[in-house]
Amino acid sequence: MPSSAAPATERGARARRNGQRDALAAGALDIAIVAASFGRLFYVRTPGRNAPDRVAVTRGKRTDLCVGDEVEIAPIGEDQAVIETLRPRRTLLQRSDRWRSKLLAANVDQIGVVIAGEPPFSEPLLLRVLIAAEAAGIAVALIVNKCDRSEATAAIRPRIDAYRALGYPVLEISAGPAPQETRAALHDWLSSRTTLLLGQSGMGKSTLVNTLVPDAELRTQAISQVLSSGKHTTTFSRLFDVPAEVADDARIIDTPGFQTFGLAHLSDSQRVHAMREFVPLLGQCRFYNCSHRDEPGCAIREAAQAGRIDELRYRLFTRLEADGD
Ligand code: ZN
Image 1: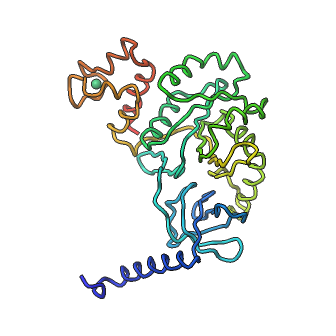
Image 2: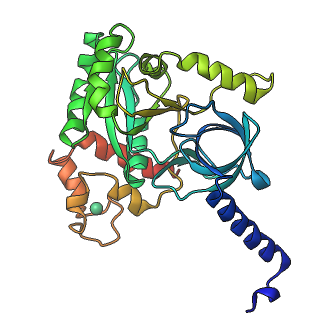
């Protein structure tokens, strides 16, 4: 079809895309990273420049961007911008219920799930986070916080060991009482990477973030004031550059603590494949379409009953599917 026959809107879109490319080539567009998102307003940061974050809106009012996204922006003045283009994502972590999907972070290299013995972490919730991370192809480690509370930590020790045995790295810290040791323990793991920190409420994740980025709270308040324009702001995800004295070339993304973590965006097959210990057993069940719950001859259930794989994780997995989300 000759281009002149294309509908006007399509021609317009193409001209706009060409215009964006020209503008980028001419240096009018900057590459930036979404550092905070708040409905239709975003904070974007231009890497490598000692410039303050800009408040940005998207062209066309699209809202399907999240923290960590790489975008091309047209700067406006000193402190504002329009987001013109979303660049392809390397990774994307999301959670979802039956009605909507929430994009948690893009382009992260790894995830740290913060857990603790007091209050005791929820293993069903941990399992869900790990399944989402595995399905998204993102490396994940467990950060066991509040290790100074030795009795509470001892109580969860068998479960920590179960995850270590599955190959998940475990980092043990006490962010509140031992900030210096915490920074030292996480230095190598954080360096040269963008890390997403996740945790259910009460695990001490905010304390950990403030240990790694000492002015995190101040920066958050500043963003909150600008983005909410006077309204009360609860919490939102933020990307922080970690200071050089804490880790080398590191960024962290902090997300609000959660009480639920839906997996509606994943298929049954994706969930099964996200259970590391199941994978070697797949194909050994009597029925090819085995759901690994009640079917006779299920190799995975038999392995769990015989103690060859972790029985609790298997049981939580079967309930997870029954939940339907
Ligand atoms: Zn089976």
